Amino acid sequence: MLIRRKQTTSTLLMIRPAAFGYNPETAANNAFQQSEGAENTEAIQTQALAEFDAFVEKLREVGINVVVVEDTLDPLTPDAIFPNNWISFHSNGMVVTYPMFSPIRRHERRGDVFNILAKDFDIRNREDFSGNEAQNRFLEGTGSIVFDHLNRVAYACLSPRTDADLFEEFCEWADYEKVQFHATDASGQDIYHTNVMMAMGDDFVVICMDTIREEQEKAQLEYYFRETEKEIINISLQQMNKFVGNMLQVENHEGKTYLVMSEQAFKSLLPEQISHIERHTTILHSPLYTIEKYGGGSARCMIAEVFLPKKT
Image 1 (cartoon, rainbow, N blue to C red):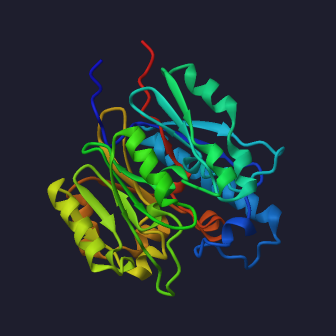
Image 2: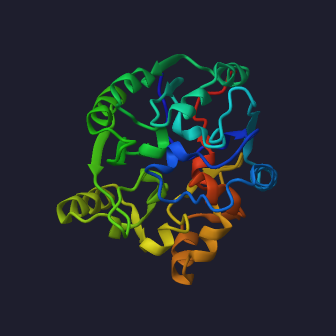
């Protein structure tokens, strides 16, 4: 069967949180999380729900199919709002589950998600990498890996959440060319996920090149972007800290594409950067301040793309 590769999809899986909040386990290597006020759990949950619902509504208003699954209180999963770290759905009918750094986050893996999607989509195979947690080897889905599906290239910045050997094994299994590198923030700490400093579009890439200190690794990235005809839209370290790198290009049911981001990220863009982006796609943004502050993730982290073939 011929599989047409696409970079964007019009179906997104999102998990509506039941107990969103600050997770000290993930804060160990996520410099984006903030703990100030984290004791106000009820207020944080209420505001996170409001942000989540408004975001989903904006996506649906432009014709994007959002499959919303309700989180559960048992087990307690404060980061369930970020499903892209534990699961990915591919155009060949494959569903992949991933090993995660935080023990509490491992409870996010839910079998009923498969059943919900199987009603409308053809799930042909499953591959489970989560057993690598026993060896402290982690690869957190499309947080760790930024895919260029059109050219079958997988990008990853190595960190405590992205194991080099496991990334290589994954790329060999999936038949993607691997491009790995090191990225650090202004204080020299490893960037915990690739998708907070890099977002891949059809014909562009938003990336914070200043996080990459090794000139050889920077040159390698520039080579791949040039060879795959991606316009580089460079962002600063300060913009990355406002989640400008945590974006995702999606499409609606008519094929019109959108670059989805938070309001904070949008307000941090320079006019010329907005102009560059709008040459390629339409910007869609929504306020996610509470989710960003306590979860350390933004718009892209909240979305698991569904590339599965639809049932006929």
